Image (cartoon, rainbow, N blue to C red; front, side, top):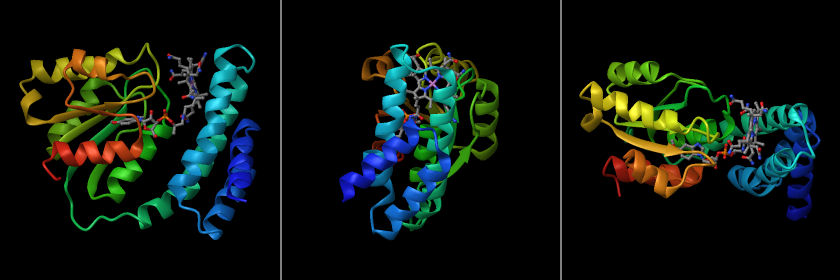
Length: 216
Ligand code: B1M
């Protein structure tokens, strides 16, 4: 029954139908399913399927856009519940979070933000397409402990390095930890650009962030 629901969730994303996606998300909560499990085992499978079809020319930009909208609606609906279930008891640190300049993919970044804030971090989400200067200004303003940089395109990953280089130029590199993520980001890339941490998913991002601020 759970698997059937997950399949329907994935299909609602493939169909690009935000209304059905939200209905199914509601249904999952009523059935006592963990919202993160619903995202991971249901909706994400659909968005990955559309991504693969797009990559091999079987789906086109409008389908990608519609899948993105349906995904955003479903995750947005589940967001308050994810926050509510958070285990946060204290503020572990401040995180300035953004999708890098030139990149408008926001779903994964926002999910990381939700999980961080539900786990006790104060998150300043600068949204998508954020230039290095904006990220660094905010970091200075709030005296952030961590900068989180998301990039979903191989062409925008370099912007993660640009932020790190700009921090070095301004003498700020040793004052803040850098965490990077996004589908094309690899461990090798993280080492090459000199970031402090990397995670493949939102749960891992919380563990890395805690580690970076010295919380076990
Ligand atoms: Co785009 N897109 N897209 N897209 N899109 C990808 C990324 C792509 C892999 C699809 C493909 O070809 N298979 C491909 C990139 C290829 C590459 O460079 N390697 C691609 C492309 C090419 C493009 C355009 C260039 C298409 C075009 O215009 N011709 C264009 C670029 C626009 C731009 O940014 N300038 C484009 C546009 C779009 C939409 C706007 C239509 C839409 C986004 C809508 C939105 O965000 N509001 C979209 C979508 C939906 C996708 C796919 C299908 C799904 C992305 C997503 O939301 N995944 C994607 C294919 C795919 O990934 N399967 C694709 C679900 C989300 C929960 O996962 O974002 O990976 P994800 O986040 C994860 C982890 O990566 C990690 O944790 C998250 C949660 O588990 N993570 C972090 C992410 N950030 C992190 C930060 C951290 C730590 C972990 O620390 C700070």
